[in-house]
Length: 327
Length: 250
Image (tube, rainbow over all chains, first blue to last red; front, side, top):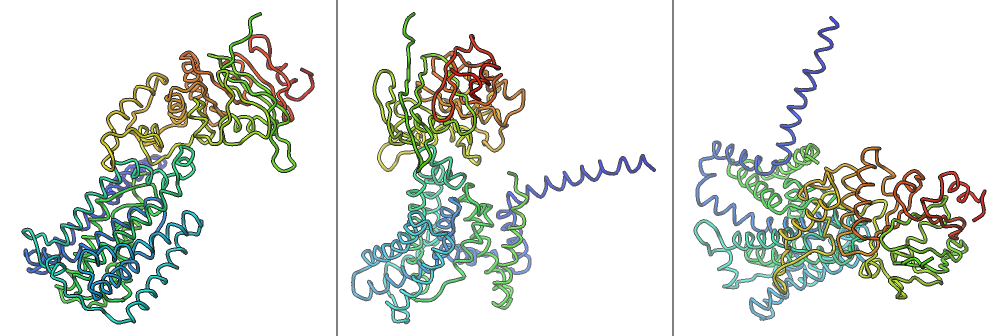
């Protein structure tokens, strides 16, 4: 009797250890594993899922979210969060629409869109880095401000944009890769390079890991925080161009789904919301996963009402899994 | 008797915070190539004096002389540029980053020019590997994250980083306070190696045995003043305790 009892704990411990090892593996690679699993399930359930046409459509649809997820990844690596990111994109889109309507042409309108978005980023940076306002509150405020400004300057009406340049952006492609996904990929590569191969990127990680230690080593946390919110807003401005191109109009709509999904993609990508752990590829795969999920459900004829539910479940599951990541 | 070769002297340093006079005219000297210990009870002014030397505080009055030159440090970075490095008690390491990244944090080496400057990862890894292995016997791999290191290894990394910039002086605040016996011995080896390489070390410690083991010269602080100095070879733990408490006058 005593002998059996003495043996039992060892077996249990070793099997728990084995499981834990597995769980940490799943947690580390949640996004790619999830993406592969989704692709397998959907291609079994729907024959049109893995067709070239659908893959092309999915990649184009993922482009905006990828750009926003990369933007969010910079902010979250410093331990912050940008809730204003989709509202900033909306404001940028409206800025583009008005400039286009006023006859400024594509290039100038695009610059105006990015500058308009940048103003929100500057406000975020000043509030958070200099004003020491909690990131959550500051960007919640600018979310509302940007949404309001977009409604005010557009009078609440969508501005139709029929630019040939935007038409090329939406319809042009190299093979199955449409221009939007190529642009998103370029942004992803540059972002990876900046994060992992430059002094600035290292400082972003250092400030997120331990602001106190970073400052003690002569890094200006204020400048780093200013910079990440500015980068996020400028990327939101780029995403605004993709949005206008896709919709064919600059709408002062509240794109809450993009905000939630950008954070969800980063969390799926294995980035800790507490900061210090930088990832760029992970959030991009997270964005692809969320797009594939939405696309697959649509193909299966599942009501649109179920899509937020599915996204929510996936994100909560991913967040639970990250608890098992190796430290 | 020849005058000792001082690498740093602090004369008549005063510093007040509001109505609290933390330093009331403290003077100490550090000799070249020696480990100088700074001891005293809590609130004696050790930390304030050290912070004045490392540029965190500016003294209200008094002079700091480094290699015969009067210096004032507005910021820790300026103190660093003059060759005074400080290993703080919290070590100022970023746990999520690798050893080599921590080693060069804030002073990264780059290659290329203009906006295309990239981190010179190879050079930084090899330099930090070399500096770390010159000092520590069981040096961790420079690519491992600081999170995975033991307390002693972290201390070794912080000390090697401080020593790695051609520093004249390395200030250490309680370097072994949180360490076990074996790790303490390893860190003490690191400190000795550093001294042998010609760097002057200012050691703040509460551990008398350690002070007697490591230091060449001891300054005793009490109530904002450096009240006594002793050669380590000519004093004892009992005498130091008496000097700290004021039971024995200097």
